[in-house]
Length: 172
Ligand code: ADP
Image 1 (cartoon, helix red, strand yellow):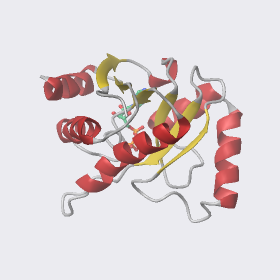
Image 2 (cartoon, rainbow, N blue to C red; image 1 turned 90 degrees about the horizontal axis):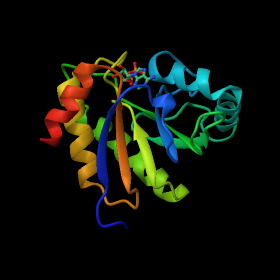
Image 3 (tube, rainbow, N blue to C red; image 1 turned 30 degrees about the horizontal axis):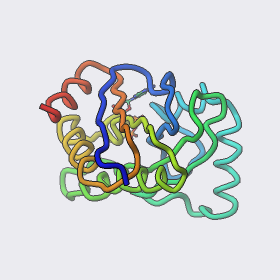
């Protein structure tokens, strides 16, 4: 376990990052979708979807559960692995925070299993799944800080200025 995990913030496109592992905000089908998921599959090429299909056929016939994570090749991305995790859809009537925290914890656990030292995360659930960005940023930063891991750098890659500002607010 490394003494500390450095948290870095970058505004930009996660598919352009050079890291050991890129985390994907996937959906439970593992068969691709919009947002960051679509971008990862587009730039990473068909090898990622091939492996996702095989995972579905072997272990995840009913889909990957919310809050869980699984790794595949990163295809043509400048990374060794993509770690797919399924964020919760935001709900006003039910507190799903622990499921969102679980995405970050499980992704770090898989990263440790793989031996990944640098991991790029998107702001999981804060797009199509509707999680308010300030709360999503709080859960992301608190969870990564509280999770024992050998990952040396957790890099949050925020697509727009507003998401970047929300994460920066958490680091102050
Ligand atoms: P979810 O379904 O988990 O909400 P989305 O992909 O819709 O997933 O959005 C998650 C976050 O990723 C949003 O903040 C969105 O702005 C951001 N995002 C979308 N495309 C990219 C990208 N290429 N790189 C980094 N972040 C991205």
